[in-house]
Image (cartoon, rainbow, N blue to C red; front, top):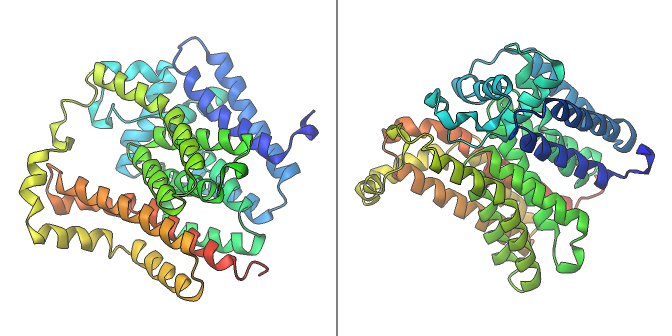
Length: 387
């Protein structure tokens, strides 16, 4: 039976099992189904790597990430006090909705929690909680986007991509925070979107795969929806003549954000995170900072001169100097610009000390830095594809 499954269908099953795991945690009486569903995720992941995928670099990379994750403690504050804490809470309560009592608001109870739910599903399968292995489930979440990236390049170019991923994301691949996962899901979504040049290229497989990637990305962190919207804007500006395809991608977007809309309605109804006013963006703070050039200089230093973003930008400029591809230039420039403008608006609106808040810039800039790097490699690969 398994031998009848191709790569596309196997990946769809892997992605679907992540969504189903989240849905099952809406009910506190589905423990057995959660275990069975997670077993499906593991079986089809192993099937993909041992029978379908011949890329040894991908297999070794994922195995090493899992081993490193298992061999390192959870020490970063966000990882320990937000994401792994949520996993523990979901596991013991057997529900993602238990946050409605606003317990431990320091963990940002209003944050979407598909990744902690996935980790709790892994713990359900094992049968008991400890403080080490649940974090490794976050690393397992990297499997689908890495598969998509590997499908877009030959083995040698993919090895370069893995080096870029390590350089750009680094410890965020294994430390229990969401930024590495967000970066890879965004990158995989960008590759799928960019490769769909017209309505005839959109297969049913790509339609459903993109919906699942968008849905998971939106449920990972709050900026997930913004990143998706930047992709759609970039696609519109790049392929504005393909009106049917743009309409189809908008339909995909609208379907995929249904879960996060329901989550935000739930969070608003139960006032989740509302008493922690220190983290609520304020329009007055935005107006107060808007006309002060010093603020732009500080944000520019942390975002644009960032040690991951600046190299990616230079790499992109070098790539288009030698290989001028109009589509990639417009797509990368527009997506990056709109996301950077969004980050500027967020930091100008912060109620916190601006420079202190900008300590998070190194994390939130990673998705766009990785995006620029990989699309630049794709640009170069068009000319030197046989390397």
